[in-house]
Image (tube, rainbow, N blue to C red):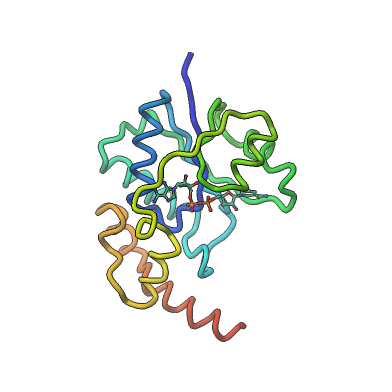
Length: 176
Ligand code: NAD
C-alpha cells in the first residue's frame, strides 16, 4: 500500500527549511502532500503571495532539490472560520494520507484530536529559515536571497516579490 504524509504550511515564501523537511518526510513515506494553507490569502504582509505563486515556487524548489515530483501532490487549502471542522475540511480536499507532519502547535493539536498520527519534524536553522524573518529582511532591504532555493528566488524575482512587500508595508501603515 502507498503511504502518504501531509505537510501543511503557508509557505510565505517557501524556504530551504521547507525543502529539507520535505526530503526528510520522503524518506519515511512514499508520497508527500504539500498543503498550501491560507490559500485564499495574498497581498498582505503576513501572506504576500497567492496560492498559485506559492505552488509554483514549491514545485520548482522541490525539483531543484532532486525530488521526484511524481511523488509529490501540492494542493491549495483555504482557511475555514471554525478550527473544529478544519481537519475534515483538509481531508475533503486532499489525496488520502496517514501521517501529518507539522511543527505548528495548533495544527498538531487539531489532527491529534481527530485521531491522526502526527509527527513534529526537526527544524533546520529556524532563526533564518523562517518566513517572517525572510519577509522582514525583504522589506528592510537586508540579505535574504540565500535563504530560499535558487529556483524559488527566480520566481520571486519574476513576480517582483521584494517590491510587492515594500509596497504592502507602506499600505498597511496607512491603513493602521
Ligand atoms: P509555515 O509555512 O510557517 O510552516 C509549515 C511547516 O514547515 C511547519 O509546521 C514546520 O513543520 C515546517 N518548517 C517551517 N520552518 C522550518 C524550518 N526552518 N526547518 C524545518 N521545517 C520547517 O506554516 P504554518 O503557519 O505552520 O501553516 C499552518 C497553516 O494551517 C496556515 O495556513 C493556517 O491558516 C492553517 N490552519 C488553518 C486553520 C483553519 O482554517 N481553521 C486551523 C489551523 C491551521
